[in-house]
Image 1 (cartoon, helix red, strand yellow):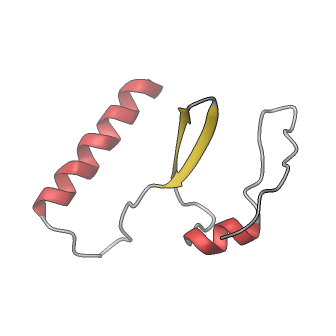
Image 2 (cartoon, one colour):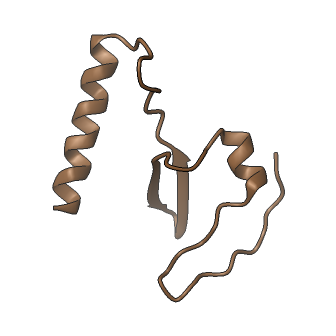
Amino acid sequence: MAEEVVLKVTRKGQVTIPKTYRDILGIKEGDLVYVKLEDNMIVISKTGIPEPGQAIGEKRFKEIIDRLEEERRIWF
């Protein structure tokens, strides 16, 4: 596992996920990530949304759509 690092927050509230962490999780430009508060920590995790064309099955598809609709309600 990668060691802890200190990140600088920009005036827009942005931070850069270190390359080592992105590589470990397979996060690339344009990917979506989950962000949540947990015990006074900000936790960022990979969404697990499949790549276009990847077979996922009806149950997983419904889970993804439900989660996206939940996020959409929060943002709009």
